[in-house]
Image (cartoon, rainbow, N blue to C red; front, side, top):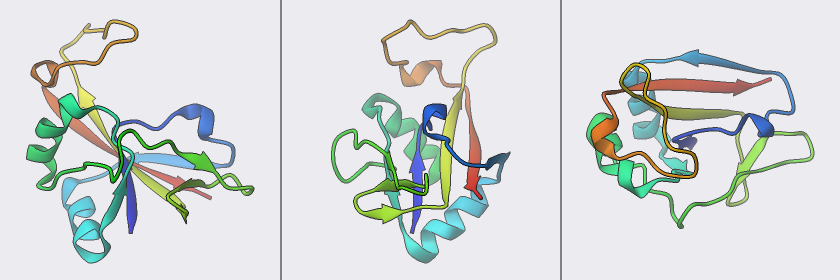
Length: 119
């Protein structure tokens, strides 16, 4: 089981971590092997993400919150993860979202898949 979301708050990084871009095929293979839990937070971008991913990244409940274990690993729904996959949107050059608002799917011109690994 893997953990996937549309962002990962840097305020939750409390131990050594690496972040690297990864290929979509890597994520799809892992999801096919063991499934996923999601902390996706924006319903308006989910259809575009679903089209890119080939599966719907909907969470089990609306906007679930990540927490940390005493060892500072991310946890959700009682499961502890040593890695997190983040599907980050690409926007047009110079575009900045309005603070406190969500961005419509029409503004997304592509996606970047990031793999966070906690050591």
